[in-house]
Amino acid sequence: MFSNLVRFTKDEDGAVTVDWVVLTGAIVGLGLAVIGTVGSGALDYSSGIGAHLTAAAVTTY
Image (cartoon, rainbow, N blue to C red; front, side, top):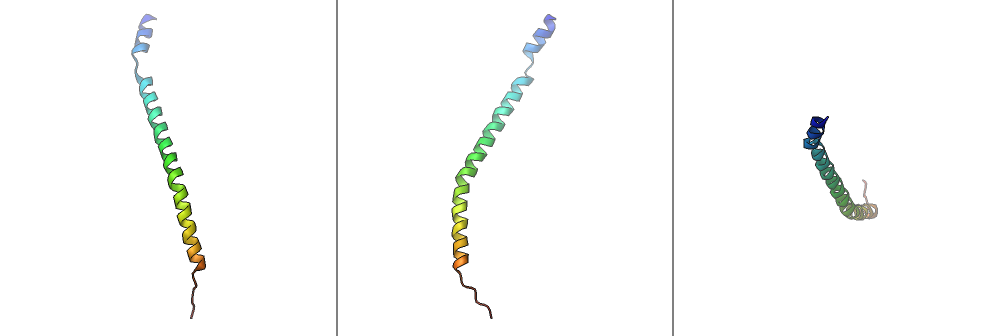
C-alpha cells in the first residue's frame, strides 16, 4: 500500500495535463480577442464596400 502511495506522488502525468489545459485556454482566449478586434473592423469595411457597390451605376448595352 505504501509503495502505491509513493508511486502516485511521483507520477507527473497529471501536471502535464494541467499545462496543456492552460495553454489551450490561453490560445482560445487569444483567438477570441483577435476575432473581437478584427471582426468589427472587417464588418465596417464590408459595409462600406456594399454601400459603394449599391451606389454604383451599371450601364448595359
